[in-house]
Length: 78
Image 1 (tube, rainbow, N blue to C red):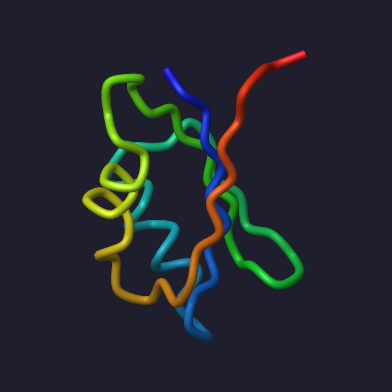
Image 2: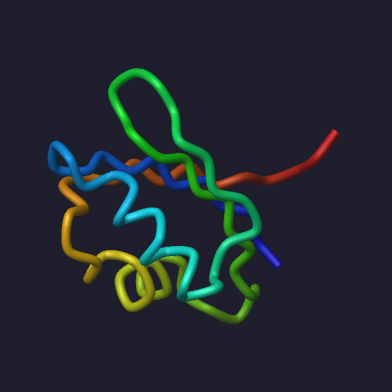
């Protein structure tokens, strides 16, 4: 499994609804509201055989209210 972090910027007033929609999909390990440029921080584990970009596209980016994302791939845990 590949650990991936996705920061999500939501349209104003939609962060809680976006978070609820993500939670219903049960694709995440952890989901946090955050301060700063992005509204939510999502930690997901993607199966090694899956294409990361396609997985995120197919399972996340069709949620209404998501304005922008920033994906960070991880390589090794210390």
